[in-house]
Amino acid sequence: MEKSLWSHWVPLPTSPCEANIYGDPEAADIVFTCEADVLAIALNLEVARRTDIPVAEGSQVSYVAIELDPAFTKNIGQIVLLGGAFLVNGNVNPASEANIFGDPEAADIVFTCGADVGYWAQCYSSNHDRDILAESDGIFAKYLSKILEFYFSYHRDAYNMKGVYLHDPTTILAAVNPSLMTYMEGVIRVQTTGITRGLSLFFNKQKRFNEETEWCNKPTVKVAVTVDAPEVVKLVMQRLMY
Image (cartoon, rainbow, N blue to C red):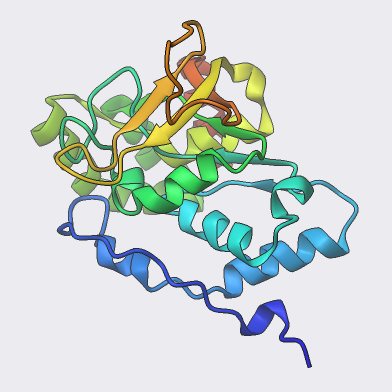
């Protein structure tokens, strides 16, 4: 009897890096394939095209789904992924952003799988916004205003800024309302070894090289390079204070 998707296990690459503000990378190695199973099976059972939004090191879930189901990239509506640093330095080291650094092998597979993949551009919430949340009657707003000091302190120490980056909310809004962003399109490959492990390198396809490269004949993805930050912050604040 043929095994179902539920019984499959896809081994994940190890993550030789230390825990940081974004969590313990080794935790990403303990990925139970039930999430990927559910995603792959749901797409096979439904006509509707779904959107996958991997946050943190969530590209591993998409990677496992791709390994489990060859039809995944055709069945998924789009993948809106949080991760990578293209026009700026990384946040783990100058080359690498945390979500990609945790599992660059999985990220490289997702970026070149042929699905409709998109990235977000960053914006941030200020200390003033946090004060507004604290004064709000919203349950979520009051809770967040109490626990955000750790994250605000990190940004003060690491970036010398009076605010925090809205990574995950911006990614979700990119899926809900992509008009809030502007995009560039090209091929992304991820460095998996050496001091630049986790580097996401974008090729805009504007040059013809004399020799074939690792970027040749690969599907393109869309990278958000600008964002309507005031509108994003406004939408996030409204939702939290609801």
